[in-house]
Length: 470
Image (cartoon, rainbow, N blue to C red):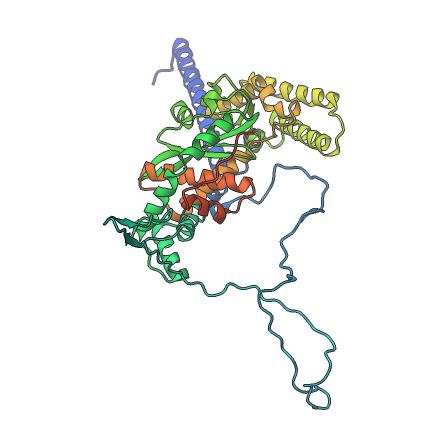
């Protein structure tokens, strides 16, 4: 066997060096891929926008992003409470008197009363559906003309359900998220009157049709508000993903269903295109295309994103940009809340200090190229967004009417997700739109202190409550 020449060995070394270089690059790509997959596996409701229900049985131990407020747990001072209390004028009084003395056994009929202990039982009497017959009398005049009495308002058929029954149907279906079948079953078992699924469907359709004026009025009022919350969530309609869009304040709620998620659906909702106040939302791009509004981004979302960066960072790293940004954001939140609660002026020095810390951390991370792969690109995109839109994230520090997060909007759409979990998807888009319109009505009336059943009874009477322009 001949020994290789110098030139052959040199060529072999060059070839092996190229292979090693290629393998090193492949290792880096695989490491980045593994990091991406590990980040996906570690995503949960604490460090992403995934709902808590997606955590399953392996959900992480509770670890809130909130910091200690200094208040004791439980109800705070001044909270009204909901304890069952005795009333001064009960509907019925039943007296229980002893017949004989517990000591000597003598009869106590003529004995004086030494005291009365009051015990009250709150219960609902047996409920039965009452039937009111309206007799339309016809009379014949001397001239030969027969005149019949006019039917009262709301009485149009030989047999029909009254407004209270209709209100309860809509209450169970749209307020408590029962399906049509379970709503009909509940009415039959509670009140002893048979109701079909079709009757439930007809009642909800009629209720939604009566809310056209309400929808237009609330839409116009929302466009004139100073701060409005926007959000959207997926919703299954006929086994296909549709979208529920929420527009709300502390006084009004407007939900709408649409096949699309983006601009088309936002335009169809009819609020943001004509809105000139502060629009609070997450950093979803289609919202920002409406330039007539001032935008405020949700800090709860960005805190979860920053937590995901912290969870994937090296445990022995001396400094993490996401942790610095998180600490400063929460410090600003606490400072602003303290200022609003106590009435003291906001310390501009504190605002400037933490604003610089957030911008400094985001700037460093945005230019960091050491993190590779999709995860590195995702973290740099987050840092660039935080750096470039810091004023939108910190708008709550300069405008007292702007909240720290967009939780108000998430509370509105949470009920839609609850409905889907309880009774499944809607069969048609029209049904979803009707459901959203009724939910808008019930949510808005509740914000104005109107009882849900009272509001639905007004609706069943064809006279829905409509907010007035102030």
